[in-house]
Figure 1 (cartoon, chains in turn red, yellow):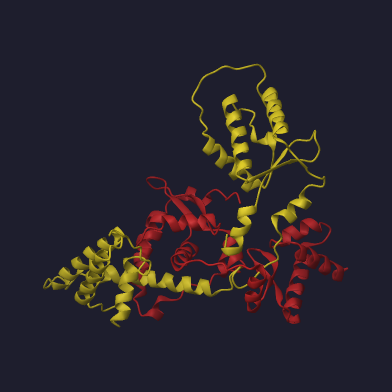
Figure 2 (figure 1 turned 45 degrees about the horizontal axis):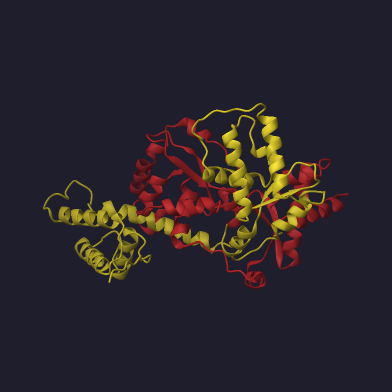
Length: 204
Length: 245
């Protein structure tokens, strides 16, 4: 039985273009125990890795998806007659700021980057890499931004905590207390608004 | 001859400052403020001479640099106060940190750039979505359906004059948003119970407009069945190949 469950899970993952969460899979197999499904996913992930095939089963954005290995990317692009997805340096920087400091206001992003980011935020929203998480309890009720599940999928992240940790600033030789203090000052307006903790969930 | 150049090399003042610091190979914690300020201003002059549109932020930074420079020159002012240069060192440090993080992020395997997942075309999917075969809907059938909606939702003729809250453009955008969100709708779903005659007409015109622009697909599964409205993916499909979209 355990073996056939594994193959059923494999089959539905194969036929899905979106990552499937253990919950999605359980909806297809309501009679199976969630623990068994989780076990099947683990075994499949390991097996595809061990087989040394051109694709693996990857954990992205809370789900599982078959993805090609990066060394075959160029051939796939050629087959699709497409150019690789690209984000400009400025867009990547803005995205990194949102990813690491979410929920974050546009004003704070502009303070860090030193330039207007309105156009870039719009691009990122259109690409569904960031989303509006709610509004800050400040004059003008400014919007706060955060990353989406699509962001996790695009960058192959299991969840937001899988982002590489911020490097210690000491390594760069700066007095960390000073920077932290400055950060605290910058973040002050963002705190003290308990109702924003329950910002509306995105509709996507 | 008038021409304008937009230069993205230095996206902002912080980028220009970092460039100068690297070029001069100086320590970010001991910036020779006079030299850097002079070079910064020289760059601004060149950019202005080249008719490059400068963002206002460049000038704000220029005045900050000049201010720091003057504070450095004041004797005794630095005894208790912190180094005036920290005013730019701190934001530069923070900016550098995020530049580094952005670099790490782009080094990851990126979907549609380095790694690929299985993809099915929208047409392929829509073939499976409805079990019944589809029939193309003619304009007249569409008008009939509209008339039925009008009769059901607005019994009796109303003659009220008022300002229509919806413009055709807004309605078109609204319909596209709805379709994007839900993938497809029934024709009648686009007409809300609480709508007015004017709104219904605008909605109908918006549907016709979208069909004409090739953004909508309209069909029925049987002549008496409710008409389905679905987005036509032609353009989106092209877009998804090129960029992360």
